[in-house]
Amino acid sequence: MAEMPKQFDPIDTSAIKDPAAKRFCELLLAQLQRVHNHIRNDILSMQMEASAAWNPGSIANGAEEAVDVTLRGAQPGHYALAAFSSDVADLVLDAQVTAVNTVSCVLANNTGAAVDLGAGTIHVRVMKR
Image 1 (cartoon, rainbow, N blue to C red):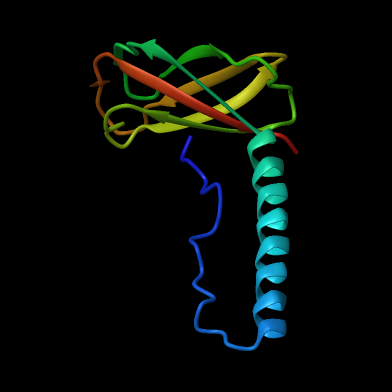
Image 2: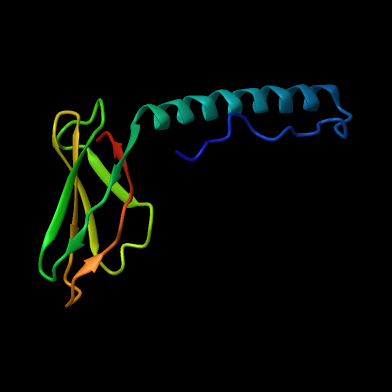
């Protein structure tokens, strides 16, 4: 998962000459940092990720290939996203939490010809509602 910044970049308050204004800015920055940390923790606690090796093989036109990825904490009704480690060559990749701790990923081929993606890694991300 992309790393969220842990804190704001330091802000130089040395140019502020008035002690009251400087203290106000420092208190405001401290409060903003607390709010940022709270939001960051909320967002991170709502997301889960997992990955698994997958070789979908040759998928005929009009056919689908599926794989289940175990993701502890996933529940039906959560939002699910999937990404494959290589180009999916105009196939449609879908993800759905189909059971507790299970994300089902499906590649659908409607390209007009068979497609073989080869082996790769399927990555899933689930977000609580």
